[in-house]
Amino acid sequence: MAETAHCPSTNEETELDKVLKIRLKVIDRETGESRYCSVVETKTWDWANPEYWRIVNGWQITSYQGLLKLLHLKAEKGYEEVVLMEAPRFTMLSGG
Image (cartoon, rainbow, N blue to C red; front, side, top):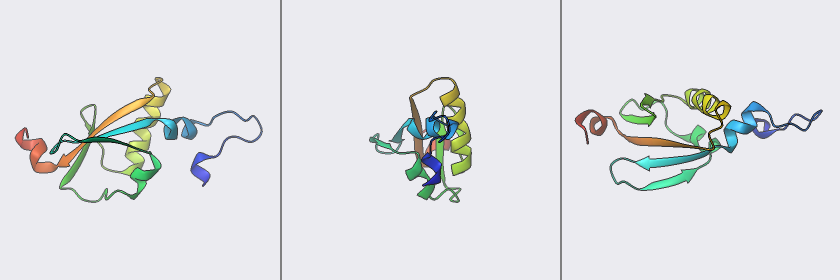
């Protein structure tokens, strides 16, 4: 998989490697259950469904690319874990 490759000439970790190493804690707002998932796993999520929201630090994430961008910013700041809250849209708007 090209997303996890190291730079062969220097063997240094690439920026994408740093992003993919971040632990992603996913919290289901409806049930309160939490789990860890890989960043790569999120690529398979249904990002096109506007009725399901994913929030990180108050920011709504609407695409896999958007999640990667946000995680890149977190990786630059040295974060090792990011919490993502997910729930149906109506629970986020109603205060849930």
